[in-house]
Length: 469
Image 1 (cartoon, rainbow, N blue to C red):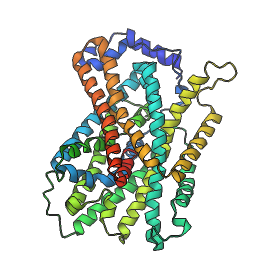
Image 2 (image 1 turned 90 degrees about the horizontal axis):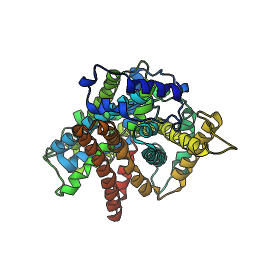
Image 3 (image 1 turned 180 degrees about the vertical axis):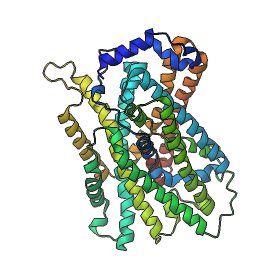
């Protein structure tokens, strides 16, 4: 569908009366008054074939959510206690689900095919540019973080298999060997997929890998006879600030909203009710995984639980060495999805920059640009992850941007779609989401800087795994 056809359809939505408008919330119907510029929004809708299935969409969404961050759940629960942690977890689940549906409804009304295009169509070019920059920073940082996580996990696996140690090991257990070899073997062949709906099979293996960890923790809990004598229902941390610090961490555990827009755009015979099923199923299954690992891990080890739950088990455990390898597989399968989102933002930015050039103007879906950008992205992130030893602190700060995709930008959409209808109730809701996104963004930066100043690099590493999951 071309941008002219999309805009014609949208103008028809604006002008045609709808008998059901009285039944719709104002922030959904008010979009009929939002202006769209048909001259400034590049699109690739003509190449989008809605071919995604419901089951595939569920696996892709779960793949975008789950990752190495699940390893820290018992530690996070130990800070706040089960009551506080579960309440915050359910709040984030509800808020995240609402913003998913706001994005999906906006896709129906605008015909946008990616996150930043949706923001630009509803909220204007300035906020679109902000979203593009945020997407590029976040996806590049995530790509590097995934490769760093792969190196961290596989080195421990290599030490276990080869009976070596960190201080005395062969070259094939070195991170600078493991990261390039593993990424070239596993990630490089699967990053060339054109449509996000095609990642369903890859996502199945990613989710299955995380499920192995969940089953391993459940089995170990059933076999373990002694339990912690700590009251797990109440916080072990005495500082309220430390308890509050779990909110952005749990928020990152559900961050997948930039994937949601192209996923819904490619869903076959899409309707909002179908996507509600997809989002609900994916987030509920993910929540079950988080609760099993978080609650059982905390009950087994109490306040002595490590930021990485696998480190709490004996290093000689074959089951949890396999779990570490499984988490590596999950991270490898998530990298191509993040690259897909980032490349889309990069391509759109390149189209805008070259539009005014008389010598060279990039067209959407240019095959040469796609190949060059994907390969350059892979090589750049691989080199940084392999050789930049101090990159973890920088990436962890950049990862704070994740909160804006989940709360800030959806909040801006709600405000933009409600203000012309002067419905102050939904404007207030949108403002709350915006404030929540700003809080998560700033608070995570403060926590990362504070942990680095206190000399807790392991906390920075665990936070890095969290937001990139």
